[in-house]
Image 1: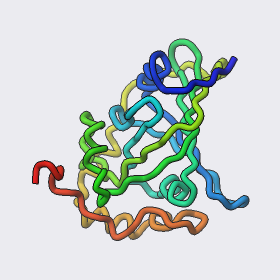
Image 2 (image 1 turned 90 degrees about the vertical axis):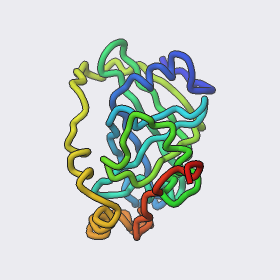
Image 3 (image 1 turned 60 degrees about the vertical axis):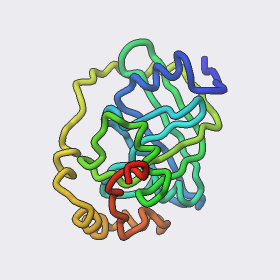
Image 4 (image 1 turned 180 degrees about the vertical axis):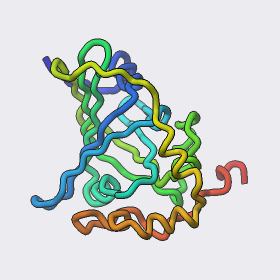
Length: 201
């Protein structure tokens, strides 16, 4: 039923890129730590960089569990489900890294997301994942559901923020700088958004 792939290409790549939502799962090294599972949406916020590397935009939210776990150990699983069409589930197991605003790689990575205005969503980082194991499975029990479109609430909420107010928002949240289990989360104070790509300076 399931199959293992050496790379993300062809039919597999087409399936992943067509899905409007995916899920990320991470966990701390501690055996009694909190496992985190997060849904990710917004068309254009996910990109396949090469046959074994993917990336997605990490936007403002009320926690930073995924970031904290990646900073500690790098382990992550991404999952896509077919809610329409033939049944399928694809998982990418790998190692991830959050690339923050003050990293010199940040602007180069942003070029892979031309259809997203990062300023409207309080962009915190670009998460880059290197695949170590890629598998699919049948997905026979996944229900049919209709994709009606992205919600505009996230963009409407965080488009009101500038770097200072966004940083203040993060400072007030209990589990942004520190995870639920006390791991380092998003580095604060928030670095300012670069005014322009380095090549334009």
